[in-house]
Image (cartoon, rainbow, N blue to C red):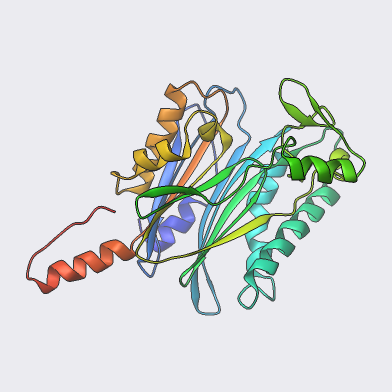
Length: 301
């Protein structure tokens, strides 16, 4: 899919029925390709959103990818999808201090969403698992229990941590702020919310923060691909299984669809959204090597 078409195709998100929405594209500089697939799954409503965006900032090609899993309705997830990355790339320190820009953008987006919620009676919130690509840097930021997993050197590595209320440090933070964690089918903040960090959730905001945990990875020839997905995938598929399923599928859109279909078949009870980003350094290097020997080769990563 062309650069412009890939942007246009991702400008809106409509789930007219239960069939998966999917698509993909290739970066203008040819360094990465991406695909996504999203479905309500067995749920009657859709609260998952995603963003796959390529932008130019100070002459750099930037890849911006995110999965946003709403709760209490779709308002928060849709707001984060529409505003988080715009707030990030307009941050004055986006290039010079990207990690602090990401943290600021998360907190600013959360604050602005909460202001927009003044007339709403029902609380809404959202997770966010995002990946920022530029140059040889991959920065993953996470709030909540959507998850980012990479394949490096053929091995699966989680590059985000699920924020659950029963984690020792999260529970301590919540209790230090005057809140509590209790069992109600699963561990919940205030007996209500099953994640300990999220956008929105104004009634629990003192305890449920939108401070992201950020991890940086170097994009080199050992980094093969990235999977971002909502917990509709991770509830039924392990990190290792997701990587093994993705490995043989060069087209990231097809890989995302395969992950979604497998999660559905395994009985996932939630909305399911998957984004796959495949780094093309290995393929480019292999193709150049084959060309120098007078042969044509296709190397799967």
